[in-house]
Figure (cartoon, rainbow over the protein chains, first blue to last red):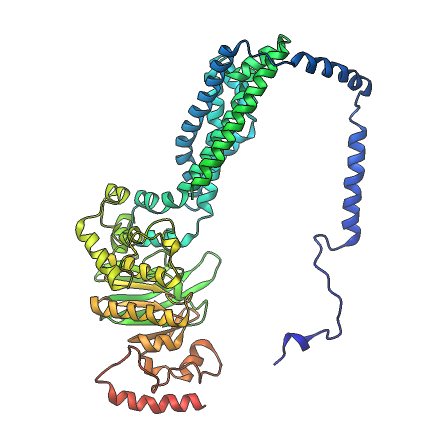
Length: 271
Length: 283
């Protein structure tokens, strides 16, 4: 019988953790290469410091013309703000609904391999392009306005929620699923009896988070013509109505704040 | 009656978990399956209800050949086999009652399952079983609020809700403390006898297997190497199943208080075996 104590190296007093890269030449060599690349890339940026310096008084000018914020056109502001909020809500709702089948298909432990691969491909494809690119695309197809914005946000919401749902299902302990399958339950009963109760709280949480995100993103897609408050903001900048721009920005900040507060409150209630 | 013939399973990784297992459970008895980790105990149980697809061989339950069934017939066959798990495998966010009633999922239709509108007879049976396993009043507690022993009681009730012809029990006590283990085994064995349902029980604890089972099957490297009663389990048998070890403290002694294994009418054999076990444990 040998215990760990007397097995080997009885006199060994030194010990250190295993390094990620064991060989010190490679370890420090890699670090050196990263530093060299960092300096090289900063050096090759060709920043025109003179132009940058000239921007400072211009920024000051812009800021001074922003104050005080001008809420005279509050009717336009509130109307378009409402459009943005409606866009966010509509996109979240459609996203939630469409994400369920896609998410189920994208869970490797539920879907057959070919279905899984197709679903994952759809999710990856819709996540490949930034929302701005989707927005430009939809503006070209359906013209300026909220419809293009909503379609953009639906794409973003579906891919986000379905990805989260699929990953949540994949992380479920296999035992519960095994037990329900062992009772002789059909696939649909298995879904409502095992997957639904286990995945629902997180699915709702992710959806509410997405609603919050959609409120923020609805302002961005507006800038490229997707309707709502973002479109008004872009127009105000173009016309140098900086005081109105500031009014819009302050409104957006307030809206996003409220969205965040609501989202946190609602998600804390889901347990 | 369950007949398993030349059942074999080779996993895609090349591991041969079962190499032609043959046995019959002809009467309502509790059969303990013992054997080292990796001997194929879990695979055996899962091949019977085809949670694991067997590679070859036959499983016949009450005249139905299980291995060749199509999907919907397999579901019908599965509802006749209640399964109990080591990790209880309750749906954590559902209540005790919902978990117990999930044993009826193979019988009710989709809307009954979705809306939890079970027939009154099912609800009555569920309350009765909850009472029987010692969880009266717990019906609305969420499964994730229960202790290990309580969860396993729900697991037993769920399996019995299926009104099964066979119980498949996979390490029911491996996650429980010794006292709870005995309680769970006692409930399980009592109910199996009461309802006349044969049970296959994978179990690590040899003493527990000896105390509570009617019959013990020893599995080693995917093959049956022992099939007998608790009294036939000797140091030599255990060495054959598990390998060389000092078994004197493992084998249940006969003078120990008998929890459940009273077998009246076997007195003669008992006496004979007593000497045998003494001999084995001193050696």
